[in-house]
Image (cartoon, one colour):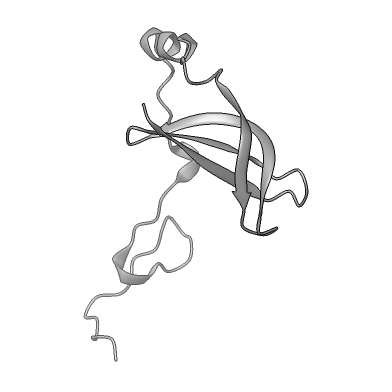
Length: 100
């Protein structure tokens, strides 16, 4: 059983009763900081890995066979891998390429 409350539950500006004393959030009033020139410059810089593509074989778990695919190269934790789609069944396939 929840503990008894000695005070009434607060209301959010005439709205419904909010449990556990929450005051509610006015999400419409949340403001987002405008983009600065520094963030715009970072977004415009070209990533050398963004344009790299890979064509080769990868094992499709759904088909249980190696399939030729064309995909893009990504890097995570110092490891490069190619991601693409199996041309037969449409499942995502991944091939680990090695360390960058």
